[in-house]
Length: 332
Image 1 (cartoon, rainbow, N blue to C red):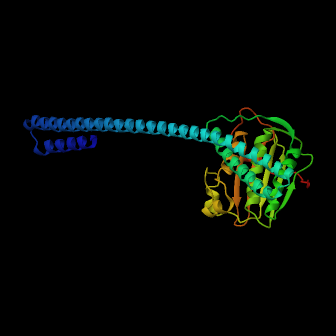
Image 2 (image 1 turned 135 degrees about the horizontal axis):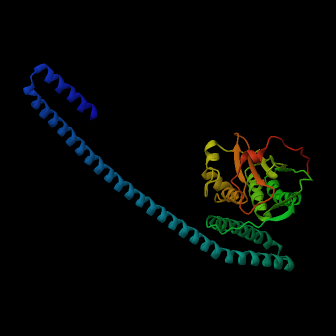
Image 3 (image 1 turned 180 degrees about the vertical axis):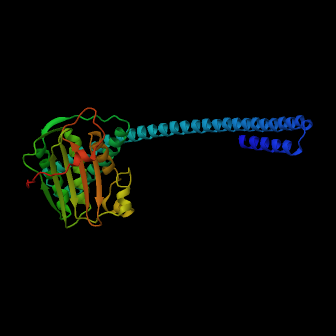
């Protein structure tokens, strides 16, 4: 607008010079005032319109912020209600399931003592199905407790090689059920760590169980390493298998809750898609990270954890955890 005023000024001065004579100077001055008045009126109207636009925009932004806040509150309330519902349902299911497991074991012992060996296979199937259902219920209960922040890490100092051996012995029958070979590579002098042994055992069993379940006539391999870092030692657990592998789309949604690769997975292998999500949450709870990858055939899951848990773990740092060199490994 300032440019327009200057241009009008130049035109009026040029007009005054061309016409000449002092008598026209008041006319030029009047025209000058008229032009300036119009310019100021235009600026005033523009400013008012801009102010109204800003006020309307402010009201719209405030309304949208209010809607977003309400939507966030509603989502949090729904999430809390969902977690509470799942926790209550899981708790109510565990009581009768434990009773079923107890009675099936008792009936199996009585059948064996009374010579009714024909009943033992059916009682074993009842017990096995009950244990499987109880494991699923426990996973649902655990994920809701993790979401609600009710799970605490209970660190203890323990020899890592002993825990790895116990986990491998527990996972070996599942791997061999699919005619797989379970190989464990762990340095015998890997030393003592301070972590939550129950959480670590839960993660490793989930990963080894998945690897054995989705692999047939192949190999499941667990490698354990310890890396010295200036800020503290880090542990790396690699669970690799020679199974069917995963597509890029499956890898992308690997750690989502209640997500599985395809419907045939659920029909063939069972499960509700909580094991990996639960394992990653437990890893992050201890200050580490869990990642998965697949190159078409076979899959590899890498768990990285600090060798010593701190009460307020720092965000996971991949560079600090990985390092550049690996120690020499010896077969366990």
